[in-house]
Image 1 (tube, rainbow, N blue to C red):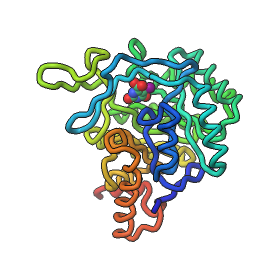
Image 2 (tube, helix red, strand yellow; image 1 turned 90 degrees about the horizontal axis):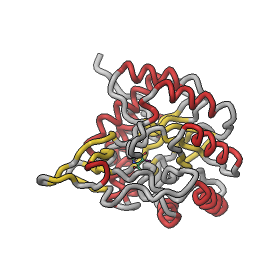
Image 3 (cartoon, rainbow, N blue to C red; image 1 turned 90 degrees about the vertical axis):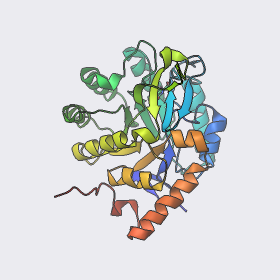
Image 4 (spheres, helix red, strand yellow; image 1 turned 135 degrees about the horizontal axis):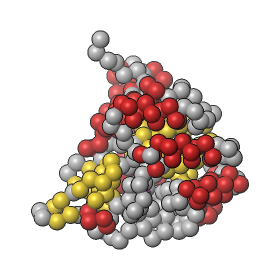
Length: 310
Ligand SMILES: O=C(O)c1[nH]c(=O)[nH]c(=O)c1I
């Protein structure tokens, strides 16, 4: 029971994966994802050195989703490179994702130089959209900086690279970002990261400690924004740049809609946080039932084929 997919020459036994940041910081968590019905996993975004992250409580759920201000807690790049080497040795035919970023531009190049020099064989995701490092803007909301970074990265980086984007809300921003991305040999874009800096209140108080309660919103409430970003970039990007759809996936119908909008792989965050790794099997079953009912044999029978009203 699986719906296979691919990004370039990388084949995945199932089109579902975790959203970076959820259940993927420690090796034991990655092992649970590796053993689940997900077709692959992506690590928590790694920085050169390990980070504690923001004070707890920093992740909470609410009626329609989740809010987090984790602050980029991770075990540091060497930990993930070693873990990935071990997972790859155990499953030579499986492809994994490594997410990375850094807080200063020069360090972004440094961490990617280290990844380039490593034996990692999967896809690398440059996170340009972390909303929770206090005092640091989301890189991808600065078009000039994004262009400068990608230009320099691709002057030395030869592994397969994708970028994690924040949500955009204006056609002119979709246009500007797509023009930048189309200029580079990207393997994919991952749309979207959490909707930055929402505020969840319980009675009279915020529900997370960092940043006076402000944090990235995920889950059911962001699906429509996620679908719009997936489809806007599907419409604008060169077909060689694949799209990973992340955001608001609660059931098989949501997976179907992400693919209909153009996604080749679908990331699951809040639902994974709430339900655990079993969610991948149930989401797959639900997707398969929808495909069967509609007579679709594979993803390519409906990927990107969203119908407009003429
Ligand atoms: O606070 C985080 O660690 C975090 N939280 C998010 O919602 N997205 C991100 O990319 C990151 I790096």
